[in-house]
Image 1 (cartoon, helix red, strand yellow):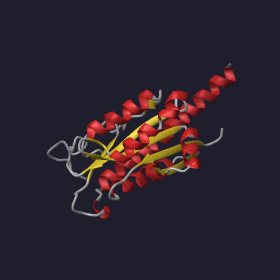
Image 2 (cartoon, one colour):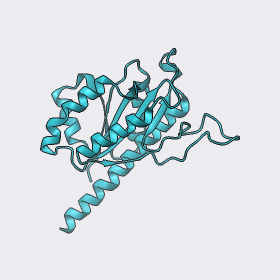
Image 3 (tube, helix red, strand yellow):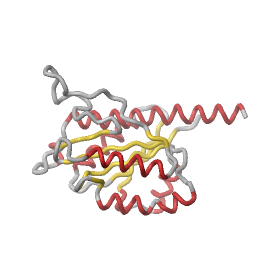
Length: 199
């Protein structure tokens, strides 16, 4: 069968979330049979909107500002309403990742916001599928999912440092998310193809 298309639709205010988006891209691209597109939602061209419409899976990414996704991401989300009316994204897979300065930083709300956006479009949510790390006396902050999120990938980066400060475990977790979504997209596409052939 032909390759599946994975689109990463993200906004990054200071570059930290862009680092995570690149890690997600790396993970998705590591799965044979996947084509991955990294799309900054603040500068989408008509061709890039078309890539979103044609994608098998869309992974949403944004920093968490004031307890939710960034204003720029919200502008993008509102602009998807034409797709919502036409059900353009129905039955695509969806997933998400976010970053904030604090360990919690109300990132869960941003991930929940992504799930609601996906549900409104009739999409199917792919969770992180990683156990919580860094939660015993013998574990360390260098474990995947060190912040213990399950809906998607969460990262914490010191707000007074540059992009080099994005934690290695958070990047690894984001890479895992990208790989998982691409794997699930292939499974989903193959199942759909088999159903079509049987019909």
